[in-house]
Amino acid sequence: MQVIELSDELLERARRVRLLILDCDGVLTDGLITLLPDGDEVKTFDVKDGHAMVMLARAGIRVAIISGRESRAVRKRAEELGVAHLYEKAWIKLDSYEKILAEEGLKDEEVCYVGDDVVDIPLLRRAGLSVAVADAVGEVKEYSHLVTERGGGRGAVREVIELILRAQGKWEEALSRYTK
Image (cartoon, rainbow, N blue to C red; front, side):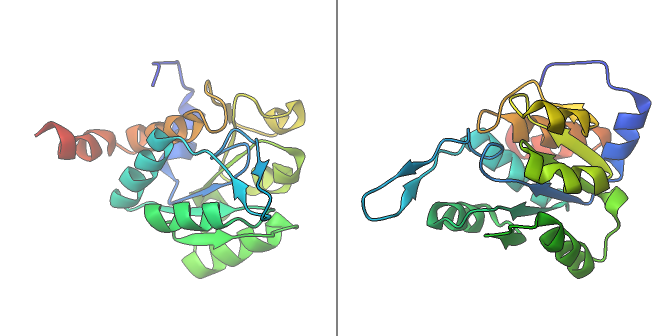
């Protein structure tokens, strides 16, 4: 993660995060979808994003995915990474968001949401820490507290997770598993 000047307000928002909610297409992936003749699809995920999600979960911060599409690839990846909540075919993402918060017993200010397109704006407006990936549409960036340096499917999620863990003083502990 490049060292950048972060405002005290942004760091305080990151300190409060207890749940990271991610859009899928355009955030966990680059947004490209390859449709196969049998109707299945191919998506590509960044392994560094996935590993960071595991590190975040080990640090006690839960991860959820809310996607407007349905995909076996996403279900498989979520299972591999131990994602706590996966909502697919979420046409109105705010409904899924509210269900997750109720199940987790959390408030908006304890949530970080990462999105890339206009369908994500209602959640960005609610979350305590709202993040747009670098290649998000302009309107999404306007509703975000932070815009990542990396694009969707290219390390943006890793960037957000490192910010959260560093702000909460948990990065060194998460890293110690690999440096001892």
